[in-house]
Image (cartoon, rainbow, N blue to C red):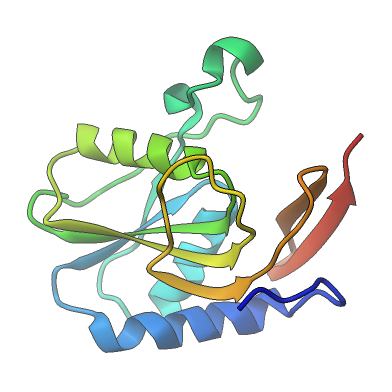
Length: 169
């Protein structure tokens, strides 16, 4: 069910809810990979909340975007860090917001450069709809419908995650 945007939920509480959704399906071969930047913050929290023995991986999709030629390089390119063998592992990609699906597609392309996972699932805090690609989250705690000109971003202040909504022209 899609909820109207009246007030913004507590992103920290949402991380706990997401952990609660993932916990029952964890296996010893499950690894988390967070998409920079919001997904990386969430993957770090999930690793702690789920008591995972190995740290999460982090992926920067800057060079895999399909709009790279249009927009150029993002000014904050970070190194992809996947310190485990992805071959035959169950990987949960973690992101903050699922919107068009293009970020997830780019992350999948890069992930497969590291090997062939047994399975890849998607966990997000927010699904704002309006997909341009056939991608859906396996784990999601907040579904909402926002106009295209409205941005939804996760921010980190100190150690606290919070949501921001902005209108674009």
